[in-house]
Length: 398
Image (cartoon, rainbow, N blue to C red):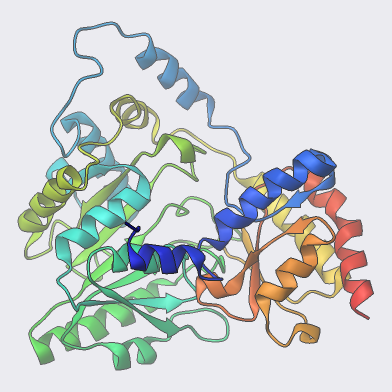
């Protein structure tokens, strides 16, 4: 007997699960050297506490003792939670949305898996601008699809012409993530409008209209006056998937949702399919308690200025050390260039950094060979204390 051949090969491949592997390596190193001696920038695990309104909602609903408080509800989620998420998305997208457009999910990852199972046939493709969140490959592969990686421009903006060239009759969707993990790029409204026009032309020419899937868990975390574009007014077959992992610092609670554009020609069918896949994938429904929590506290004010401060502090250290990096518009990642000494081998360079107790994510796992990622959603002390390690690591290369 043996486990799946595909799973076995994927688990043992060099670039598989690079973020989690580094995170687990960090746990081991911290036990060996102490928490304050290891500088773990591997995982986007928010360091800020949830807003007080979230804690208050948790306490309120955890105290309820009414019958069936923790029982099943419809697979799509509580109607009041769906309505709350519709209101939230209406404000973000600038269009009127009702609760019947929403399916509550087990985080953004659960949302993507439910949605992809709902829309993919064997042999279908999903186009993604590269670099991208590393798990996208697995999510698409889960349902018989193939991820088509299309490089972005040098500034990590969307290469519209390259995406247009990659479109075929097998293209089921284009998947974008803004602010982007790992580059921090926020796509402009102009980019989204141009992408929508390309997808419309493609639909007219081949008879199949790809969905535009917008993965937006970092939407609220933006800097320097940037604004995340609205896809719903630009393209009727657009779908938002998101969670409260990053903006409310609730990654472990696994709560998110799918919202289908009310103008989508097959909106009712897509929503019904996502409700069905939520059930048959075994999620059954999003966590009951946290549906109630986010329905009450989704608009709690949160201060993300500490992330900007930490970004600027880490940028200062990297500049001093001579590490080239992109300038992020949002999220909490720095996307950095591997030094010339390593000939673009990001796996070797991140292994080298481990000697200085710096943990970073190799770029190959994100479709970005020759780069590496640093998550700065860590304590300010850890960032400032990492300066000596970064400077020594780079000085020793010379």
